Picture 1 (cartoon, rainbow, N blue to C red):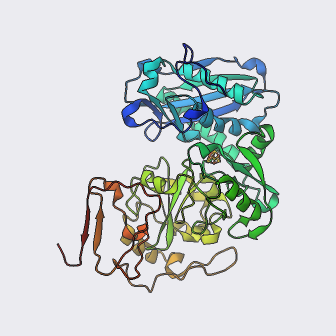
Picture 2 (cartoon, protein in one colour):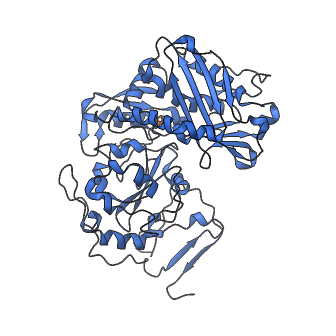
Picture 3 (spheres, rainbow, N blue to C red):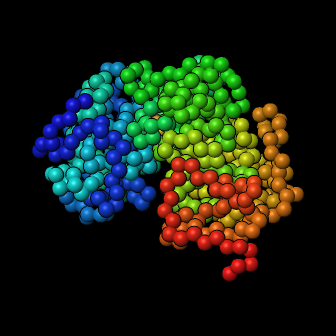
Length: 484
Ligand code: SF4
């Protein structure tokens, strides 16, 4: 794509080079959607071409010029599309491309998907002449039609009126749900091909997204059917088939075809991915995951918190945003995992590590949302923030409910006992001579349980391994036992 001059209609540059551009708070004109305001994006196929006003952009609610600088507003982006080759199956595919194409607009940051979209518009772009969201809508139509020529007609409605966004949101969630349900009857062993998605490599170059029937994409926006439709209609695009090859590990979900793709797509960074593992060579996570999982060695179990959760603290003392920074970046991080909500419904959900029997904690709003996916025997055994506040309380809770991690987890799929349990083990004690490490008085969110940071003792009392860390530390205090 060329780079049109900034002009009246588009007073900003448009180019793939802006993909991945971040807009910091200090450079922010307004924020739309995100954590604090409702929002969504939706593509709807319109079978009757006469019902689409091609190129029209309408706005319901305040426009940019009426917005208060530095504030956050609700935001819905609704796109009606028509094309002879388009059918309903392509709605999700086209919808996911909004992330990519709007990323080409200078000074406009688009993150996440579906009802979690988060947009920032920079002061600089407003200074250059951006006055209206209708200009963004026009540019978006131009980009969609240039990149996906099978879209013959397109009409845009943006909504910034909060009541109106909320009013439409329930219906929109039903559309998402209907798409998700479609794939639940299909499983990895039923197909010959999985699909790769490289859309997020602009943010996370080593990310390897593999979409399978049992593993809907971690962004939640692309299931196996969507990926197949995308690969067929846009073979040059980010989705392409991955022949499964030979199945090396049916429980972990390791295939020669996926391992080859891991090498190819990560530029050699990874050579193996187990699709249904949490702790050993897990799937990589870019930054778009709907839910972040974290391993807690003190209880040998896994916790989950989702984007947009009302829960501010997990048992490890960190909110979603801090955990997300450990999960993301296109890395394969053993002990952290980003997933899409639909993966909870998969019968292969982290089955290598014991599936639901290894889950010890969930944010209560997430547990409620996916309650029907949870293994019945486990529903009362998974704690939330309403039951426990920290690791000590979590251990006590798990003992009280006789959670499988306490005496050892038996894997449902093959009957193997995969953990020993810790019922008989001594209480978690700090390493010898080390009572406490207080990290980051300047940044409260960096107070991390020491065991979470891969503490291990060989000759020295403690060894910290921080890989690819980005740390700001105000002060470190290391105390000997008994020292004040
Ligand atoms: S998270 Fe993965 S599947 Fe979803 S758009 Fe990004 S690369 Fe594609």
